Image (cartoon, rainbow, N blue to C red):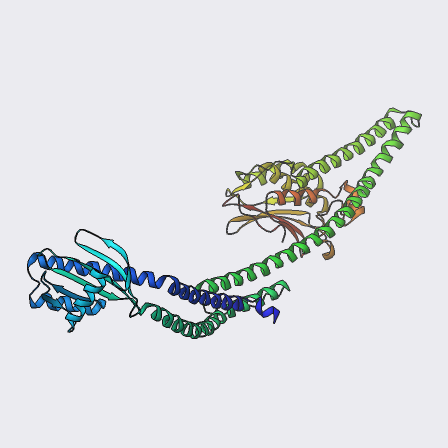
Length: 501
């Protein structure tokens, strides 16, 4: 019950009941204290207005006409006024009552002689006097106006006030009865209206409670008032937005979890990287140290042996220098330190330049290298970094070229890009290693890699370069060898593609 009286419906009904009760009470008080004065003021105004009408008729000389008599009788009947008009010798000119002689004598007694009564002057002018009189004999109250007209006749007007108190009491009783009925009916109507108003609000409250429990299936479906419907639509949108936001938060939380896992993986990769670097530097450092100690201790005295020792030291130092240089390049690419300059250039000419630069190595290894494309292919990319990728691909192909000893470079035009393939005959890459060869220091055949001095960084640099240029690179096994590829833009430098296929 206490909860009900705190509801909107109960408060509106109680407020309506109090408003109706206050209105009725105010009306009763106004009737009791001000109705008589207002009524008397209205009667005084009516008497004065009637005098003005009759005096104007005396100016015009229309008092005795039939039209004037009808007009005066109408006013007297409407305003409940007794009218008597007579000459200076007492002859009656006009009267609204049949017993005008008795009325004239009564006026003469009350006004001229004032016997047995008391009076209060309300208004006085040069032509008339308006008084409030009480007849003690009859216990009656009147408003009486008498005076002279323009033509010299006398006029007397009288209006009874005795019934106003009874009228006020009767009006108050009627107002009380009517007010009680109106209050009961009004409360019932207000209850029904407020229930209609609060029903959708209750529905919205239930929806908000379900939303608080993260249940976003509840939707407002009512159709009542425009404002409530707008609130319901806003609640529906809020529910959808909250559901979407929570979904995004869950996704972000999942991403954060993945980031934490990735961080753990990066820590492991960092440790593995340090271990790989240490391992890669260990062998050349050991060789340099051994041969340097041999030279310092004079293990060999002939110039030819000393030259060999120095050559080994220089060769191992060169390998270390190349590896460190590649590591620095890879670090700049991965951290964004290497600036990428997107220019438009002929990639066909670039490929021919890379082949020409490696022609001596092809001859030394007995490799047949071919690139048969002759048409210019204009691409958007960093020319220097693209040359670095192609050089790494060609160098990798030379190191792993076997059997038929062939290297083939070809291009394939696509919708808005060109794909460049670098193929070499040789052993295929194991399927489990296809996705791992881009990882730093990963080597499919460690013995073979050590044989030609590879560090396992070249393909990592290729992957980092292609990521910086937002292009793809990949590898696939063929029946007679391995084929690497890279994609370059031919239409625009802003199109991003998947990192790797």
